[in-house]
Image (tube, rainbow, N blue to C red):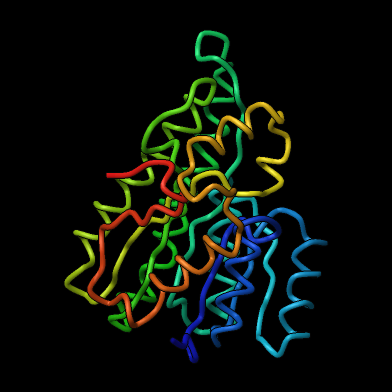
Amino acid sequence: MTLSGRVALVTGASQGIGRAVAVKLAALGATVVVAARNQEKLAELVQQIAGSGGKAAGFPVDVADEDQVKTAFKAALAQLGKIDILINNAGITRDQLVMRMKRADWDAVLNTNLTSAYLCTQQAIGSMLKQRWGRIINVTSIFGQMGQAGQANYAASKAGLIGLTMAIAREVGSRNITCNAVAPGFIETAMTSGFSDDFKQNALKNIPLGRVGTTEDVANAVAFLASEEASYITGHVLSVNGGMLMG
């Protein structure tokens, strides 16, 4: 499996799943555009990829800001000429019971997790249509499939990504562009590191494989969907959850 000659753009690439995805795609030969808010972490990632013989470029951007998204994509296209693969990974949480949730926290999560995917797809899709080849992969969540108490905003945003995935898949399938989603379960990241030990132990009881997932587990799934080997898969949600949710 190779991504040689492809240009991939990954949002939320400075840490966690996004960082692992960027490293994996670069290892498979893609030139990787990494985008996130933290410029220092992006620079470290670009240096890491280059040190391993890969090619990468960093573009600081807050994906919740439409103007910043447009500017970053315009710069990436000017520098690299095209975008073949788009990974909409950026995401945040602002957890609270729905009866106490502030409107600002609802809006922040929906804008960063869902609206950003629409904005980024809109900016990248022209390049894909022109060359009649593309891969769009949205990183959703098991909680977008089954819900989670205290995460109404997060669950809604991730469920919305699944609907967006299927709609885009239908729109652009005839142009040899696929759109799929990856739904991670309990993955060891900075976002999950703050969970209590009780929560983690209870979660493990519900995972048939008996372990927490790694960012590399998710990156491997993303890499497959980005490859030529997945050319007949579109509108699909690939669960990477150790069996925590089946069906």
